[in-house]
Length: 229
Image 1 (cartoon, rainbow, N blue to C red):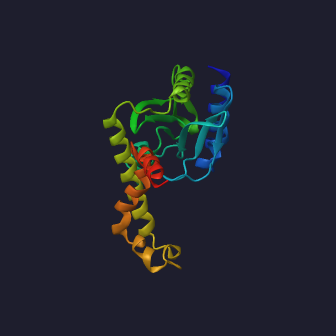
Image 2 (tube, rainbow, N blue to C red):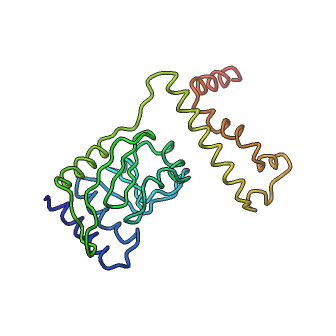
Image 3 (tube, rainbow, N blue to C red):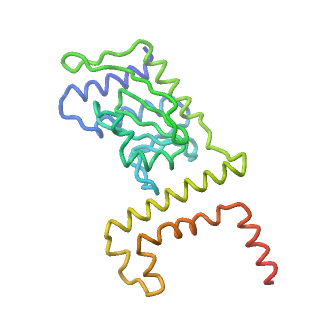
């Protein structure tokens, strides 16, 4: 068993056997494990909130984001978590994601599950029974996670599909925010923009946000500026 993995598994086992641990208790051990596995890897716990929510870790190398990790307490059924609203937000928005309860690890790329591994089971008196070869499997698992590149677009059809997914995601987030009843949305709104606070405005607003990403948009903007000048 590798030293890095042994330190990780013994740490979370000790925390678990004390009987009062939560999901947050195990995070330092996972952070140390991830950072030890790769030179220059930084795993930031509770990073800044992003559009789709707040994944528990962002993993970076030289300030370049490599992926995200969402943690749950040991024993939480990950099948149920996969079907949750939280994962339905994360999977289309985060191209490289790990979901874990610290003993089972699920890896998703571009919303599709790529691999599942389980490194240990909980035996009598809370003692962990480590799976054979778990150390090598988990280390290889994370190294593949680190090596996954940001997805590129190769065809117009693929670009259209990506933009459609982003537009739908933004629309859903706008609807969620509007349904929250936050008074700040309407406070001080002038008559010309009050219609933006209605759920029916979500789809056109999402399209408007994504419009600068469409092929030819910047070229048309440049041409119009030249014509005006």
